[in-house]
View: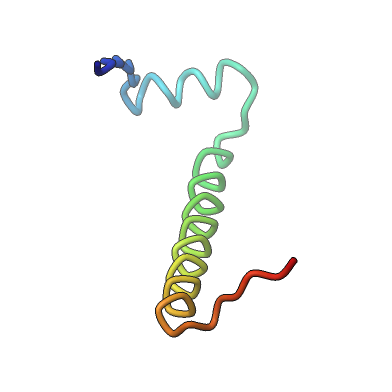
Length: 63
């Protein structure tokens, strides 16, 4: 049994208008995008590192 989800995503213009209307400074969105991209890159690198160690047999479980 599957579930269907519908997400309504506003246009960039509407999103920016919302941010300004609710008191977010103009640069906030760009800054948040940059931080998000940096965190996503770091997570991707961490995942790659863990996978490399797993396939090399370097991961062990400690009690």
